[in-house]
Length: 140
Image (cartoon, rainbow, N blue to C red; front, side, top):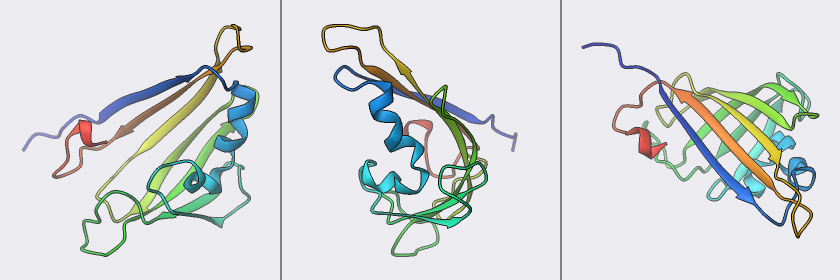
């Protein structure tokens, strides 16, 4: 069987009533993704200092089925780099029970042009991952 190319994707949204400066504190808090990501009920730091490159978080009770038959799915994710001035960071999945391998994501928050509400922001989330057995790229 021929080796498949990595899956790559981008998801973005624009917020008209929240600036990049208002949104960034939620995203830079690497150990608290469960506070804003639907279905992720558990997130805690397991290594290093929150928000510093190299820190690792455990995310559990994910809205994705476990491939090992476990009742709960989980990931361990490492913050690769963070740039507070550019409001961007990258992270990778180190280990998981959802079948994902070689997952790396980059998140960037950019300001929108000032408008009636003082401007908003655009959040862009890019990822690359090895193809996941039983999934399609759209499942990501």
